[in-house]
Length: 235
Image (cartoon, rainbow, N blue to C red; front, side):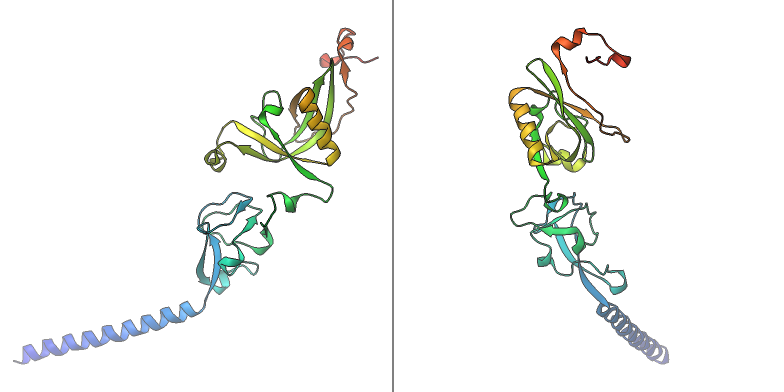
């Protein structure tokens, strides 16, 4: 009889200890939860210039010390805006890297007042834009009416656009549909006229590329001889 009562008492004591420990753990958890604050993070990997929509961002609770001072704290404050930088899944969204998305394109915050983002399709350049990437600087030369003239040098490629969004997200090789270039309105006029009336060729600059005087060359000058590296000697 004593053994039976002893086992029951021990069992009761263990239950009481477990209940007390559970209560302590719950209190500790709730205390830690109370020290956490909401913050908006990327729900999946987001490329730069993504328009933030439902499902692309979410709110999570993080320790206050782990939250960036400039982080977005509410999901509605992020929806409809554009992230200027790529974000990995779970990464906090910062207010300073978001721009308003209403009636604006992805380059609005990156262009000076006198600049524009001109889209040129692959068909606008002989050979297309294969191998050209965002951040490259290119020279554009037109062949027209027996002459070849460099229209512009050091034109920045703002973005390469692919037919398939999956290709762009993977950053894998694919045939681009075209590119956005940083231009002025006057430069845009020259490029559009060249595309419509001649053949435009793209030359990619190296890291140390600088503007080089280029007066152009005419068909009859091709027979006047060549200089170093096959350069045409102009009269």
